[in-house]
Image (cartoon, rainbow, N blue to C red):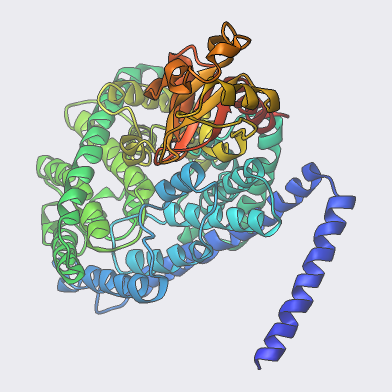
Length: 603
């Protein structure tokens, strides 16, 4: 059996090498990337279809059963979330054996710190885990897991074909774009998401592959996703200029909701992080989530069913299966319930992820935005106004998503495409811009980048740091310097000068560690005075060891660059635990940096 497997492997390796050589000779890199972007669009689109349908029909199976359909207080809601979280934790612990939470953050970290390499299991593990979590009521979204899946597909396809870092990141972006486009049937939103959230450069080199992946995935969504398995709505009431002040109020309210969501999410997740036992996390997270869903059924799962009810004029139905259902006709009491749903949604989301569930905050931000718009519209109408509830729900979704994700263009185009047109483009821009500007002084980073920024791992949003990270410091080290000992005499120094082509000499102590350096300009005045050859010691003319001209081989290249910028040194000595390794020059370092930037940004 082992011999047969070995034989198959040898055949595969041979075919792979032949295919690889043929591709290099016959297919240009540009055309090959376009072909791979199409393949990734297909793969990420199919992944989105499978995930969305699986969760949808799991939800239908649970909620459409006769034993579930009651109008007031269903105690089964207390049990389902904990069951889902427990199964998810079991799957992740014993099958995946890796942390797959915070999917989009993990993708950004892989781009920043792992040269774009994402583990192969991410092509399926997040899909399975999120299906279990959300299908049983976990109050999180599927978008982050599917983006993680699409990005992992792009990364691993790029690795298989041995593509460079630039093209690997591009294919990761194609996977992310295809995932968003496929799950919402929104190709422009998928494209903008990769540029705005994943921070890909906006050039023709990147835009065309992203468009191919987005269009391919969205077409698959059109063909395979049934109307019940996705979120969509057609705007029937036009935007009225007289309602602009109300949309400004909505934008301000959405920014406050976004700030609350970000702060509370971080606070609760930190508290869960202090709990070491997984069983305790499951019990606590499942209990909190079960109670909240029992009280407020709209918190069950992604929440898109509740949004559809609000958009279609049946907002009171969101309280079905709750003992609060009988109070639905009391306007002020109903507004209070909506406010409680807004306040507790983040608790439900954080309890899901903190307890061990897998999912993202993409859908929760849309849900919160929809409920916020529904709340503001009903409040205005209760006070004597007359605004479109459906339009406020849609604009609220964009405004809160903008505040949480710091991605206004993605939010605007997503809602515009979901609604099948641009009827609400003006109010979408007004509310989203206000939300972004209002929250920015308090939160500089999005929900995806906040943790990375604190740890200094947010390289994708900083081109210089990205370049420094990807450049290999060891390849910049020069070794054609002749070392001398600090106990040597000037005569020994002259012999070193005769065989050296450089004007700097590292000086080593008796333990072979760096003691200092001798510069040719310091030797030149006495180098022809033979009377000093046996009386003048090297240590008398050397520059003693100083941190200003020494770097450790383990230092980040960013620190090396900063040391060059802060000093007049043209060469820095590279050491490892004090032992001399070589030199790194200012000219070669900045030349390599410029070359990297030009290669990464070229059309």
